[in-house]
Amino acid sequence: MNHSISLTVNGVRRDIELDDPRVTLLDLLRERLHLTGTKKGCDRGQCGACTILIDGRRINSCLTLAVSHDGADILTIEGVARGDQLHPLQAAFIAHDGLQCGFCTPGQIMSAIGLINEGQAGDDPERIREAMSGNLCRCGAYSGITEAVLDVQNSLAEANQRRSA
Amino acid sequence: MKTFDYVRPASVSDAVAAATEPGAAYLAAGTNLLDLMKGGITRPDRLVDITRVPGLDRIEPMPDGGLRIGALVRNADLAHDAEFARSYPSVAEALLSGASAQLRNAATVGGNLLQRTRCAYFYDTASACNKREPGSGCDARIGENRLHAVLGWSDACIATHPSDFAVPLVALDAVVEIAGKTGRREVALEDFHRLPGDTPERESVLEPGELLVALRLPAEARGFSAHARYLKVRERTSYAFAVVSAAAALRIENGAIRDARLALGGVAAKPWRARSAEKLLEGQRPDAASFRRAAEAALADAKPSGDNEFKIELAQRVLVRALLLALAGTPKRVPALPASPFSSPAGAFA
Image (cartoon, rainbow over the protein chains, first blue to last red):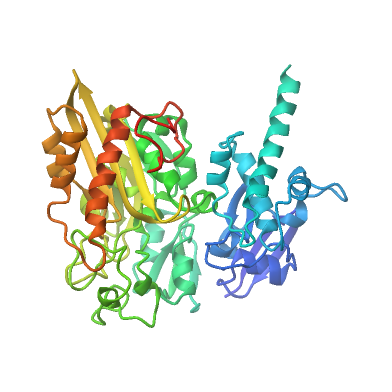
């Protein structure tokens, strides 16, 4: 039986006919919509490489069925830059060497955007490390990743302070 | 993954009707179920997606001062609900000790309680496992079993229940609401999960087609909010299942323990309420000596199921440490960054 779903992906509405309910959101993005920035690492919810935002919240796209997300608003790594202008987290990952091979980086950046949206970690490195523990980096760029997230958190806090001053 | 029918009912009664057929499974976030289906461990013929059933995603105060939490409330939303975290801080702390931020954003509270064991032999379809395939045997008994149960296990199964959330819940007398074909019923969470016995494939008291619709915390449990902690020991600092964990909650009056609530995680096929230890603490001075006596009582019936004798002593120490953390007081900032065995009981993370 076919299932029709409609998603907004990076601001663009996509109407999709699913001929199989087994398709995960990750496979839909990569194989059907050809958005291959979202990576398939473990495909079992352990590595975080497939992290995307659904309605502003970070989740593992490998552990959810596309068919159950009719109407969802999805943001992937392809949707975070504005033209040539990098998202602040993308720029911070480069500035702080938050990567080596780069395979985990889209998931790390999407996870960090989710973390900042959640507003729970603040500028506490301990909380940032805890909140980023769902994203593995086998190159071991963790210290750079934490610094990048901290940097963006601090700039946001400063900007907010200036606004309220 | 085996093919399946996918249905999305719009009400609890439609869901129950759709799930009554053999081979049907409820789908919420799917963070555990899809993993199991990808591995061929669970092979449902039909998925009944309950994520659009209205009314199951609310956190509601009860007229008697208790709290009702719908089965579809996401783990992260519950942990970060300010009123909930203030009233039941050890439950929020346990939620934040589990999984990763991504998984907590998706996973539901009902799914958390119904998640399956992480025993590696259950997950490996080439191994014998009485839980996955009744009667096939248990390869864990002769395999890597240092993380397996030390309480309530049987010759048929030595797996543990992996939930953190369930541990303080069982300590605080949570109740689950269940919907079935013949109406609704309630079960104390302590009686919800089953010990393996000869039927390890039956993990809870849910009958086929029954749906867990909500969880309730009694008003009385708020009385422990000033002294309630959850401590989890794991093989890495974050994003790992418990080797052993403990929930401890105290009510202290005039320098003595008026009431204690204790439970252990990672030690049995269910969250393990330590009632004998609670009784020992009543009326006692809260100190390391009385905590140690209580911890010894909590593990009095423990026995190793393999290379895991160390867990018996570890569980006692974790329980003592959780009690010391609870005595020092609930952290000012809740939900707390999960307690760590590396922090001092004086509250380095408080």
